[in-house]
Length: 152
Image (cartoon, rainbow, N blue to C red; front, side, top):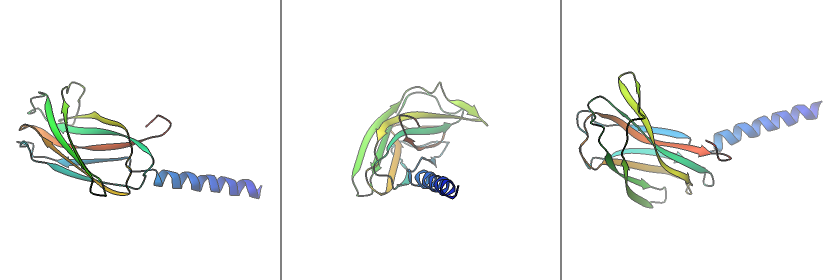
């Protein structure tokens, strides 16, 4: 009886430790000027990660209002790893039909990357800037979701 109790406690502690050490599973958002977010003006988000072996799905969540023209938008996305390594690329979001309206704002999440490993321990910095001027955007961000057994 005593051994079973210890085993249960050990399993519970291991589960709690695994959940806490599993990785960021984080959504970071940055507000932009909803009147006009000017081309080339970056927003910055920092995400700490201590999981150097797990895999993640990355999404770009965004919020906009009725003033956004819903025309395709290109962005420059720059990621700086804790060791200073920097990757910059252009991405495009072409469709905004699947945005849901909540409290006067439209929200959606655009898939960005799948099976990403954050291989360095420390803070990752994500910077996103539009390639054209945008009116009606409220915020944009990065959502990092851990993949476990092929599931989020």
